[in-house]
Length: 365
Image 1 (spheres, rainbow, N blue to C red):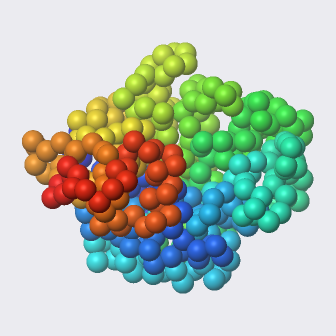
Image 2: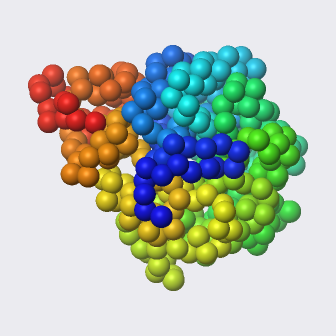
Image 3: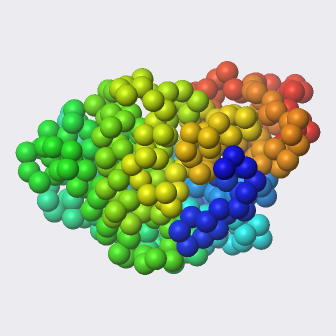
């Protein structure tokens, strides 16, 4: 199936097409973890533009796991009402909303978390999680998922990629534990599996549960083969979809067996389990290629920042999304507030035109 416009079911919900908004840091919410109306509008703008599913950026499950300024949270009942406003904002388009759950672990920011960090193993500014900590962390994910469900959204995604807390447990270089949570792959994956099993049991079958994994991370010792094994395990634990984050979804793996990671992961999971992929996908041609390699859904990040109507543009077979840079004026029109513009300038300065001159994107999706 290479028809990006074809509807698809993810567990208990159905999307109008196979194009999702990828979870992205945008720094647009409040310091107390409340989701802001600015961020809600930014997400809803992509739903209006035709994205079949909206996946939020990483929302913190616990205060000590916060990573960046303006990060929304799901660690308090006070966060339910703003999440409900997001559900209301998405309702007119019938677009399902998924909240990504994140704990920074050793990637926490002390000035934001205001406490010592927790990870699989100790480091310079964080300590090793005790059994009691691990119980708390599992409960934090469970309560966060229940808050998202209470808000009327359709699912959650556990962020176990990019070196965040579950990935720190999976990593053989970052997890040096000798107890039940460390050692061989089965033990290193047990924290993530406990999160999945606990959340799945709490929310029931009418709410989507997904996991995001890095296919490979050489610095952390994460290999495609181990990722494939973990994917098979968490499929058994009851996830509805697996979100594979690739450095480049158009490239084969840099690790043995030097095949495309999508093919390797697809072979390790049941055919009915939805496979989502993200990683430098820009054009409809890129997205269709990912489907040919085994993905069911493509998740667009930077393409969605610069082209919030990307799915509508795709309806014209001759359309190609114009590459950046995009002016700050235009990005503001597309829903980017000052914190997001600063974040883009700091991390991808080549994508932002810091003036008010006319750029080459107006009028394009």
